[in-house]
Structures are given as C-alpha cells and as structure tokens.
Amino acid sequence: MNILSKYFIPKEAPPLSIPREDLKKINAETLLILGERDPLVGNTSIAIEYTSVIDNITVHTLDTGHTLWIEEPEKTNLLIDEFLNP
Image (tube, rainbow, N blue to C red; front, side, top):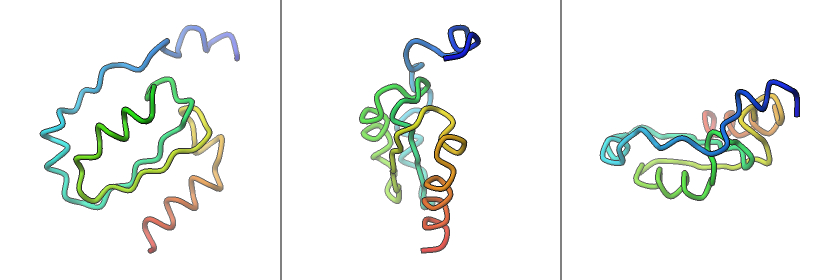
C-alpha cells in the first residue's frame, strides 16, 4: 500500500445513491464488472443483489480492487468484448 492510500481509500463503501426504483427503469442490456477487493463497492454480494432489479444485467466479479482495467486488463477486456460481441 502506498502512502496516499491511507488518505484516499475509504474504510467502507459509501451508501448507494441510486434508488432501486430508478434501476428498475433501465431496460438496456447492462454489464457490471466488480472488483472483489474494491473499497468503493464494499461487499460485492450486496451490490449484486442491489442491482438485480435490472432485467438485462450481466454481472462478473474479478479478484481486483477498484482499478480492474489496470489490475486485470486482459480479463476485463475479454468480458467487455464478449458482452458487446455475443
């Protein structure tokens, strides 16, 4: 952990700010990729359950922090490519 981490990484996830009623209105196919160790997301199972009201959602979790596109670029790109090009 670098010295800046103690100042910029929250100790727990912030409260979810999008009402579930608004999430229910999303009718586009949606891709959600979460980092298992993302301090901004917190418990990924809560995020997955919270977003389950979106009808056409595809959810993946990676063993990363918040910067999954840097930590696991190949896996992240593959998931995005498979989502966009089924």
